[in-house]
Amino acid sequence: MRALISVSDKTGIVELAQALHGLGVALISTGGTAKLLADKGLPVTEVAEVTGFPEMLDGRVKTLHPKVHGGLLARRDLPEHMAALKTHGIDTIDLLIVNLYPFEATVAKAGCTLDDAIENIDIGGPAMVRSAAKNWKDVAVLTDAAQYPAVIDELKASGKLSLKTRFALSVAAFNRISNYDAAISDYLSAIEFDETASVPQRSAYPAQSNGRFVKLQDLRYGENPHQSAAFYRDLHPAPGSLVTAKQLQGKELSYNNIADADAAWECVKSFDTPACVIVKHANPCGVAVGKDALEAYSKAFQTDPTSAFGGIIALNRVLDGAAAQAISKQFVEVLMAPGYTPEALEVFKAKANVRVLEIALPPGGPTAWDQGLNLSDVKRVGSGLLIQSADNHVLQRADLKVVSKLQPTEQQIEDLLFAWKVAKFVKSNAIVFCKDGMTMGVGAGQMSRLDSARIASIKAGHAKLTLQGTAVASDAFFPFRDGLDVVVDAGATCVIQPGGSMRDQEVIDAADERGVVMVTTGVRHFRH
Image (cartoon, rainbow, N blue to C red):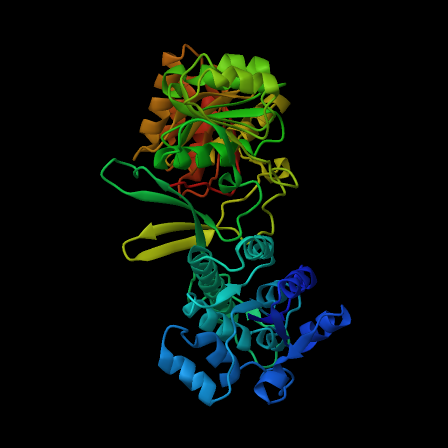
């Protein structure tokens, strides 16, 4: 058996080569890798000796040769292939270990020039990987150091790799090449070429978008039982996102569970203080903060107990036994938290169907974790995509502009900021009543902002909550004063909204007429 080794990342390669040598595998290698192995006392043949042709063009050409690709591509079950190898003095290569020039890491560096990027586009590596992966029945190809231990274990156990293993390695190899080429395409398609610029300008939206996603699981069905579905994650997921969750117990997640869980988690992780979010059909039906998980949950549940039935619950603090006992009294589909005490897990053992997820909070805190990350929001339309930057705007107190004659109290400012944070995660048109760190009424997804306001008021009534003295957030401006009148009639005493309407002054005058505080943000949060 012969193995050809050509790696840019040397992680684990010496240990792998030593193990292969111990199994009687002959080693072939290129340039720097060959020198490293020789320095470790391993017998290794340089590729130039195999091909009879020296490496040239600063290493651009070294493995692009029939004695390499013939040895990789020849089918051992075809006599004519083996005869051709014999005629041309080519030996078979049975194992290929290759990782590619670090293109992705290179272009991620600040100050990367176009020349730097181009020189880190691997040519020979992908060509060899494709040859070996195509001929997977006879050749095994390793493209990731994480594969090394299992391959060595199998070789030691049986002296060869099974067809199943070789096929899996082939699939992984083609996936790696696909991701590598897509990264190159993304980078080059985004460049706004200027021959005078040493560091090229790059558009946030390349001329070709190459999404790369890894399947996590097949789902029983989609939104409805007649639809099929599967769950995928980004190739490189953002830290603290739903796809990083570990399921501790419960039934398999459904399509709708995942969609609702994402809405709940994105909302709850935006809070600094202990918070709880309850989501039903992609909308928060209860959001609250408290001194601990129990208080936050109790307040969130109080907002809309009816809608909370069968909902998704997310907390941004470790769930303890007391909070678990309270939550266990309601029917919950999915429970999420960054951690659970043993007492909390014991409570839910009795409710085996509850899906319990553990998700680490993102680093840096809710106001910093996604700032500067290249996050995007993608929506599928007929035969196309809409791609936009993530709505990660964080409203600061200094951003508030008081436009009413009446000035807000410190408590009103706190309530307004809380209401605004919740409104960001409610489907448009969104009207959210809040007070003392909890939602008091949520109106979501209506074609009319008036109807959203009325529904929020109705829901508060159903929950036996008073809206007197509440703060109201509207995700977009009030186009007319009638929307303001509805929320003030319900009991609101302060309102936060983006502003920007042609009739802003009419709405501001109405606020002054009704004796309520109005502040504007200059930012809206449509969520469709």
